[in-house]
Image (cartoon, rainbow, N blue to C red; front, top):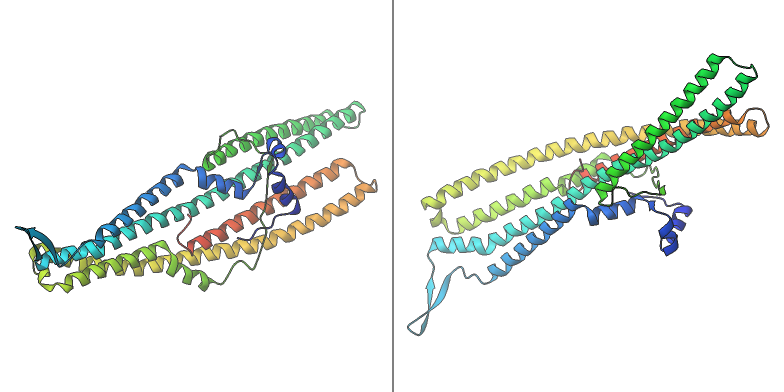
Amino acid sequence: MKKLLSAVMILILLFLNTDVFAEDINILFMEKALSNLENKNNTLLNMAESEKTAKKQYESAVNSSEGIDTEGISVEFFGKEMYIHFNTNTKMLLTMQKELYPAQMKLSWEMTRDSRKVTLNSMKIGLRGLYLGVYTADNDCKLKQKKNELAQTIYNQSKIKYERGMITSIELSQSEYDSLKAKAAYDAAKRNYENILRSLNSFIGVKLDTAYDQIIYEEIFDETELKDLDHYIERALSSRLEIVSSLKQISLMEQRKEIYEKYPYTIKLPENKKDYEAMLLELEKQKLMLEKEKIEIEKEIKEAYIEVSVSESNITGLKKVLDLQKNNLENVKSRYEKGLIPKTLLDQIQIGYDETDNGYKAALFDHNTKLMKLEYAAGIGPAY
């Protein structure tokens, strides 16, 4: 997903290399959070170890298979070397061990590796949800602080007006109530921010009480990122883990079938006949399952695509509303500068605009997350 770093962000990243700046300011941005997630999350670390183990097992299977002679074995008998030919059933079993077992272990390793990638995709989506939660909670806290300060200012003005007989005691009480309500809302916003921040810190594997001086917003709206539906369906039907896994399972079973049929006599043996027939049945089931998976994945992609399309339309509408409010804010600023309206009215309009702007940013962040989900769903696997 394309991202745009502002000039300020670039300077911040440059300053992060200096010891003094790093000691004074802790800045959170998505790439930093993602790096912590990948390097410190216990689930991902354990899956990485499992992947290493599976790869070693595959390599061991390859090495072991290289020395297997499927035709016979050389033995020394009374000082003479003799070559003993195996019977047909033994040849078949050794052929499976030599050719099929390494392929099975390779599939096991690849599935372990790809499962980690799918889990990482899912965690990236989870991280974006938490990051958005922290960002919006931080903004909400700042807005509630402004509202609280404005309410206190209005209340102080109301007390002066009441003393001068300009308002009634009921109006003064209403103003006091508004100030107390604003203070309570601000306190609640602070607690909410602290709670969701702890959840984010826990998720990315850092100390729960880690605080950040600034939370960076890097999202942009790029209407060219959403491609046509067929693009995502075609990618999914060739790249999804379920599809790839089924195809490889089918390939292994067909390889096993070929080895059996290379030694047709062995199929008549009771211990092999039952296994052979069960394998043929499983092969047909796997092929049917593959077709079912294709249908389900195509349906999933279509639903995700519609969700992104609707989200994109909503973003366009919200941007128009934001632009209208911005124009109104500029007009109010102009009137304030001319002395036509009080500062408290300008502050109220500014807070209203900031709330809409925060709502737009949250919606844009969510839209880009939906787009990322679609990309993942059309890639190696879903991120749900």
